[in-house]
Length: 170
Image (cartoon, rainbow, N blue to C red; front, side, top):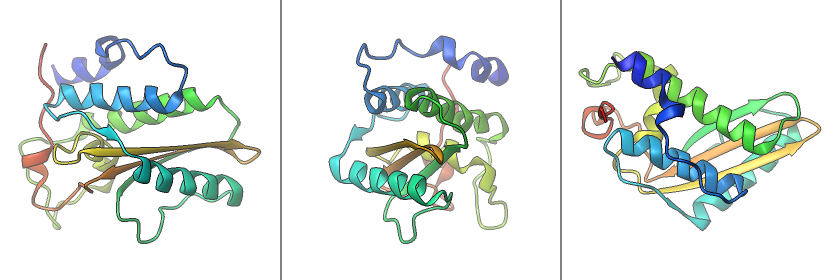
């Protein structure tokens, strides 16, 4: 059943806002995914967004792909090496990150001994106690970069079961 829910995610999401703003569309989609997991919506925060945009611009200008050192926020990164529209790159990032949910075991607490780094984009997106988000998007000759920062930072060991809930059927 879970596979059917994940596969049909695009069909279940509410219609994105009529805005052509890729940041608004990204936040709307994240909040729709969060709602499927019983997490409250995130608010777009100007400081969290400034940090995300600075890092997206840095990654694009340096042609690097690495997490921001000493970032006070949770951070998801996505890069496509060829020029794609920013909105399609952001949509692909969210789809890739959410696809990690197929392998997530909601019944098991994530600890140091079983930490699976390949699931942390998904868990950051639906982390229940996060309440703010920032989105950075950059495009140029080095490709298209998507940076999404989450505050308060999630992915805290021994707190996954309290913050990452299975999708609801509906």
